[in-house]
Image 1 (tube, rainbow, N blue to C red):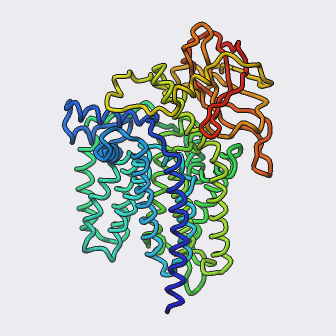
Image 2 (image 1 turned 120 degrees about the horizontal axis):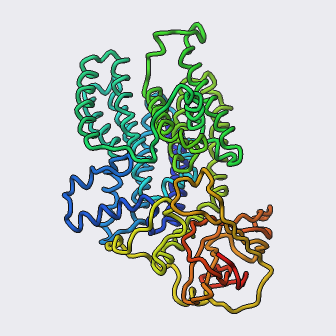
Image 3 (image 1 turned 180 degrees about the vertical axis):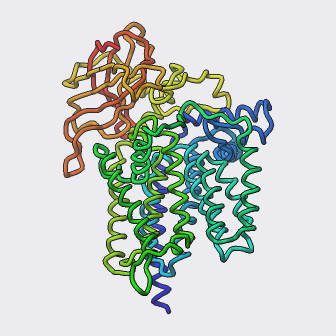
Length: 551
């Protein structure tokens, strides 16, 4: 008995390790600068402070294609705790949403398993940079993650053994719809599951409540231009492919270059495996087709189907933009959740689920993916941090952002009346970087303006690609910027965050190579002095690139 308890304590300790490690990661990289749709959170505080609308109306009003009540509650809580708009604090609060999702997955696992060891891969996958894009953004940390968590908790209360408390499912389903539009997909899944359980009265009550609620939900509701819903018979193959790709979109982690191909393979494998194990369930006579068994769905099965519903919602809303949209970083939490639920389905249903090799393989693969994600996304996360810091400077000094607001006009300064942009670079640092003196180095710079490419069709501005070449190993991999001083007005200075695209040596050091960035054409046309800028132990350093860069 003591040995069993010691083993369980060790496993729980191991499960806590990735939760703590990723919490440290979020704490390190959370930046107090609004990003894109965070403008909705800024506006919500403005409206409440100015008293131009009541609290209820503000909380449930439409934001793009969603009624984002919980993200607004998140920013309100942050505001009450700090006394100001604090996006860093909101991001940190959003981490508790990820923990809630982890608990929801734990409930699924425990519904079909007593032994705890095979839950370790879930924590390794969920609490890792595999979901960094969602959880380093205030809005999505309270949208996507909570939508999935509330959906699972809703279905948890619809299990046959939870009949006495099944009505709790409906308010939780309502909560899911108040994260983002995807939350609505849990309601038909709930009704379907009640019908398969032959709970006719309960399904009728849930259906009636759902109809009334959806009438209220969609009153004065308008889809945004981002959602292009509509299809023809000719579009069905594209939609089918998009659905398969988004189902297997976790595979993009393996290779960005072959992301669509690998996602197609993984998505096909997930769907086919699920269908095989459901249509040919295990019995004493072996694996045989059984039509009645198809409709016997437990919590794991129905939650997996619920996630397929999410993937269908994403596909319907975005397939017109191209299959490549299905593997966008903003859907990371959905991709990881599908993989986790598929894994939980295998743990429950696969014939090899109790084999030692399966346990070793599952834990080993999850550990490798988790550890590698810190390395793979290191440059992307550092670039994201630097971009937000640069935008804080650029907006404060130049009234526009260079790393966001491509498809929207930059807000007026009065819009941020309840928010103060942090100062990440002091006057000494900026004065050093904006110098026009110094010998020209061997660094090269190339500025290219892109034509009207399809992927930029929604942008208000044309896009320039900037490449700084011959950057040596003395330049660090993070907090590196291109400083642009206008020759006609040396007081006019812009900061552009640069992404490190240098090759990495086996020692971990970077070899000579390039830094790159794409920015909207917002900077005034003219000639500029360009410097490569970075911080070394908080001390400003720079290298002259050119005194005659044309923009």
